[in-house]
Amino acid sequence: MGDELASVVECHSGYEYAEYPIALRWEGERLIIARIEARWRIPGGKSFRVCTEGGRRFELFYGELYDEWRVNPV
Image (cartoon, rainbow, N blue to C red):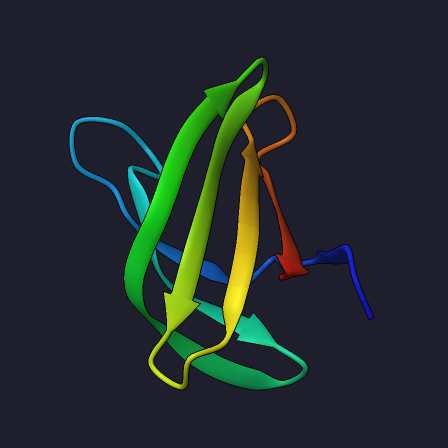
């Protein structure tokens, strides 16, 4: 499916919003994030490469301007 808008990315927010993701919803299923493999900032937001408990990998992007998450399977 690719580039699915994910209004359902759960994240930890500490000193700033969306500090890091903890779970996401993909194809109707809630997936727990087991580890964050990489994280980086780009203009307008934050990106993460994550691996779920079931071994599925995703790239997540949080767009700060529109307060919107994008999820792409890797």
